[in-house]
Amino acid sequence: FNYDVTSSFWSVFNFSNVYCLYYGLDITIFAYLVYMVNKNLKAFTLVELMVVIGIFFVITSVILFQSKSFDSNITASNLAQDIALTVRKANAYTLGFQVPQTVSGVSIKGYGVNFTAGVGDSFVLFGETDPYDQLYTHTSGCGLFSHIDECIEETNIKTKDRITEISVDVSGSPLTLSPGDSLSIIFTKPTGEVSYCVQSGGIGGCNYTLATVAHITVSSTQGRLYVVNIWNNGQINVQ
Image (tube, rainbow, N blue to C red):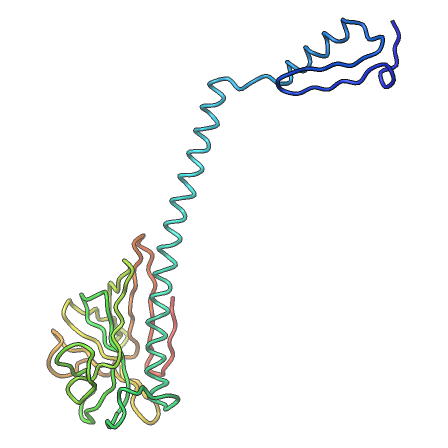
């Protein structure tokens, strides 16, 4: 038989019904069209569905793991940058670019940052008041600034990242501080000259004042390390 497809019929199909409006269309053509629709609407098998779900689960797990690792590394990097920024702030205070209001009326020799080995969740910005020493003096936490309480600002680390190692280079050899030892990095007026003070057990006089560079190592919860380097020429960088 011969027929003109465009002029002899018009078909409408959907998932629940099959409609066929035609003029002079043989019933065998209609049956063929229904067969083709059913063939193209074939559903997934159970095995195919399980494979798709499995692939989706694997991809989602990888994305979530990478996201947690990325977030952890970002917070550790931010902590290292915060430490470097605090050291730069001490330098800026020393050079007179700005002065914290808490030290108003007190004679300041310079400004510095203090770290204590084994105490990885905080560090202190302080003002040096004693013209004869180069160390951080305190009797309690940050409060009313005075000659015996030199703390200006204490930074408490709120994430799970920690300062895991503090070291200085002396005569080209690295010296790692033991838990309880403290390191003060001081910028002295008027030039901003850098001096280091390592106190054994956090008490006593200064050791290793001729160090050339100090290293503050920050570790993320995923084990990623960032190192803040403070050189005796005032250069500060994060690796």
